[in-house]
Length: 424
Image (cartoon, rainbow, N blue to C red; front, side, top):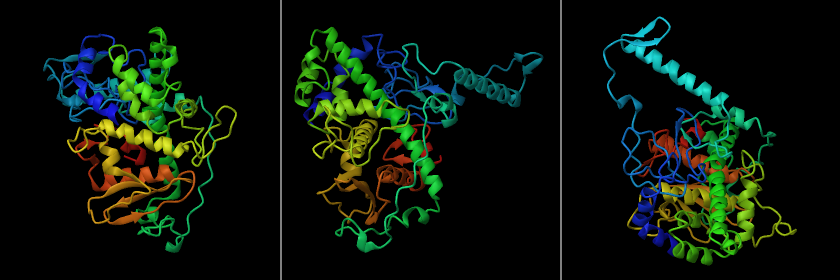
């Protein structure tokens, strides 16, 4: 993770580069790829991307320019739109014969105006001027994406087979499940249909907020490398070690490469990884996802030397949250979420810690995930939805028991904006 240290140490120069280049201080830090942003989710249609806001921004400026590859250290910059400039007491024309004369008429006008804005956005093209889908708006509802999602055809998947409720069937005898797969959702009075709906929401969120912007940025960096006369150094064509060297020597020309590298640190076969990321990002809801396998590579079917799609997606999510959480002196390499909230075999969770909230991968092939809560182990159904359900249970726990907060970061509508997937 040495490149993470380099990224942190060069943070000042990176932000200086942003300040000195108008193309980066616009609606999105990546003007060349305005889609590297986060927070696909439902409510107010304010532009929102996953890059840190330029230092000169006002606290009341709608947040944009935030991307999954850049950490925002404060997570407290969001402000209610109701705290802006006081309304002048003189009557304001609303259109027609109506005038704003009191608070009630003002609220009515604002509500009508916001509804009109939403209709205009929905009726407009779903592509940005660059021709790429612009999904990085903050606080949008799932319904607002209906025109986009109509472009894709989906079939309702059959339910994953339920694991036996017998504790003797547990895949990790050292950590028998306190709640088995058959018990875990019923404990919270959540139906199978609701879980399936949440799973679909999560798949859309991962695609819109992490996977698609990442592949767009990889393409952008590769185009820049070609322009610099070094097409042989493209992401996917060289090793991760070589990319770290490129990020160091060409930082002035490729200021975002250092931030992309953590997402690629999951397989030594970079050619397969980048190809698979693009395949997974080719549909609107990770439609190519294979939970216990992957794609073909050079005419050869997926084999166990390559990461499964489950492992790739979980790594992307962990990398995303590593950069969303504020820096911690205990983890100078920036892997805060990975160290605090993710664990995989052969490592074992310390069940003596009462504040555990860990996504635990108990088997590698086929991949299987559980949730560790305090000294309890909550199992989930085996199969293609296991990874998604473990993440959903993690989010549900944060929403119901942690007031929507992951440490000092709000995962709700005023922050990362992911809790809507579990019915916020």
